[in-house]
Image (tube, rainbow, N blue to C red; front, side):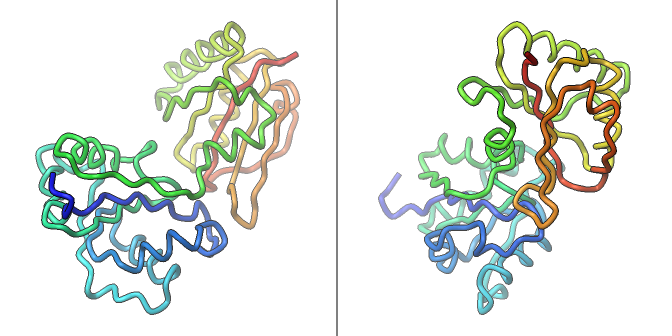
Amino acid sequence: MSKNTGRVILFPVPLSETAPADVMPAGNIGLLRGVRYFVVENTRSARRFLRSAISDFDIDACTFTELNEHTHAADVVAMLEPAIHGHDIGVISEAGCPAVADPGSDLVAAAHRVGVEVLPLIGPSSLLLGLMGSGFNGQEFAFLGYLPVDADARRTRLRQIEREVRTTGRTSIFIETPYRNNRMIADIVRSMSSHTLLCVASDVTGPKQNIRTMNVGRWAKAEYDYDRVPTIFLLGRGQ
C-alpha cells in the first residue's frame, strides 16, 4: 500500500473505573487526539472513554463503527476504508487491550491482508498484570479464554487443564463472565486437587483490586465474593 495509507491503532483502555491518565502513557493520548475514525466494541462506552481521556475531545466530529460478536466477517474489510484513504483508525475494546480475547483481532487480520499498518500501544492488560501478580511461571503460560458454560463440560475441562499444569508446569489463564465468577471458583474446588494453586485477580488496576494466590484446599474454606467484578483465573503447579 501507499505510504499515505492510514494506520490501525490499537488503544488499550482502563480495566476498571480508573482515570485513563492513570494507566495510559501520555503518548497514547497524544495519538488519540488526532483520530476521527474509530472501530469499537460498543459506541457508548467508547465515547465515554474518549471524554474521560480528553475532556475537550470533539466526539461529534468522529465516526464510530461497531465490531462485536454480531458483526459478519464479510463486513470487516469495509471498516478499513478510512485507512485506505489515508486516515488513522482507532480500535477500542470494552476494557483492556483490543484484539486480545476481543473481536478487534478480526480487523487486525484484515489490515495485514491488505497491507495497512497496525500499531499496538502500551496499556493495561489484565492477563499480564494478573500473571505478574500471581507468583506463577511467567516463562511459559497459556491463555485459554472462556471455558464451557455447561457445568459437566466445564469440570471436565478444568480437570484437563489441571493435568496439563501438573505435567508441563505451564501457567494456565482463563476468564469467566463476571456474574459467574463465584461459581467458577466453586467448580475449581470441586474438580481439582487441594494442592493445585489458584490465583484470582479481580478488579485489576481498579479501586478494589485483589490478587490472591492460594492452593485449592484453602480456597475451599475461604470467604470471597467476586461476582459482577472483572476477574481472571490462573492455575499453577503446587509444591
